[in-house]
Length: 301
Image (spheres, one colour):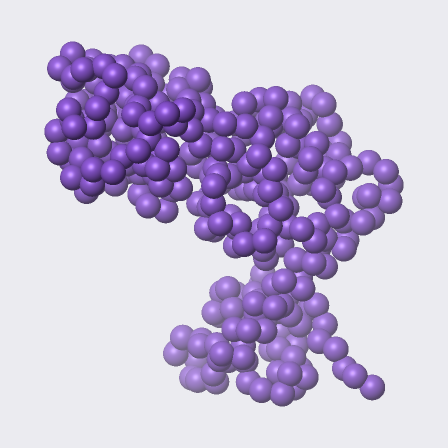
């Protein structure tokens, strides 16, 4: 008779991989350390090889190649198990109830999520949105692992087989201080800007890649080596006359540059914009919920 690993054992291993500490993993799993250790030992016996290196307690926990593969596949199984549990709410005939874990990137979240929560509360009072703001890479990882249900991302981006629905476009604008605007020609040409005068976000923010591509900025010498961590920082740098940057229209519409010493101008590049999309796992049973949520987001853009 074939013995199968349990989801509980896989959960123990994945949690240990994330924490690299037995006591912390046991605490997160709400079990004793001995229970967690025994579960992982049984998993090793079933698989037939060690999943992590047994060292002294002071050494960092190192997973074997097999252990990393089990963690990877374990995460996928746990995510699909989460999708399986969603069938209960579907059988009750109400797709817009319960909790929905939504991830959103930092260059969208401050300008959309407040309106989204308000709209959902009014139209679907039985649905509770649990929100997480993070980078695209981290959000996609959380989605694949089953920690999030649906993402709101700027496209295009590699989503590795996930489902996606585009819900709108967000144009790019450039901002520049009023004093500097008086010294350049409109429409703007990058050749007219001083070297290192274009400030961008850190590379982990996909807005940088989208803006540079959409606005046809190919002159690397125009980009300042300093990278900001937020749009608010970029606005303050521009307002103080340090240079120029790209800002999405939704940020402008929500007052990001209000009462600043700033002029908004059109960037080079025909119809420069980014797309906004909802992304979810193809194995999820809540497609109708995601499509309904997409309709709400589309109406807010």
